[in-house]
Amino acid sequence: MSKFILLAIGGITGTIARYLLGGFIYEVLGTSFPYGTLVVNLLGCFIVGFLAALMESKFMLSPNLRLLLMIGFCGAFTTFSTFIFETSNLIRGGETSKAFVNVILSVIIGFVVFRIGVFLGDIL
Image: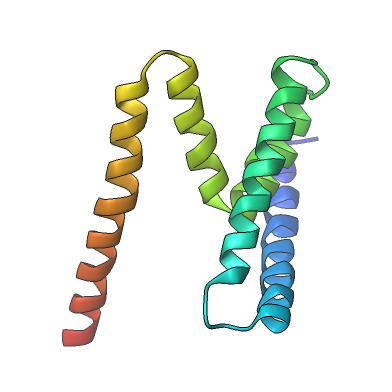
């Protein structure tokens, strides 16, 4: 099966799963806190960690399944899980300072540029 088809199938199912799970969580817990996003992000981190273990230590995840599940599904389900996976790989590779910089840049600067985008959108 084509790599792009595997990515598309994973992406579509990940997007739908995020929408359904996030919506369900918001219905149950309300919208006073971003519970839906939190649950999706934490679940995505668990899934990527579990799949990474199957791929790296158990050799139970083929390259095609990695495309479908880790990149396609989890990539659409939450990019936060990819951020955590890549940061973890930096730490595992002995590049703790790069991992720390990645966290700082992604969270703090990400928030700053988000606010700049909001500001520019508001003045248009």
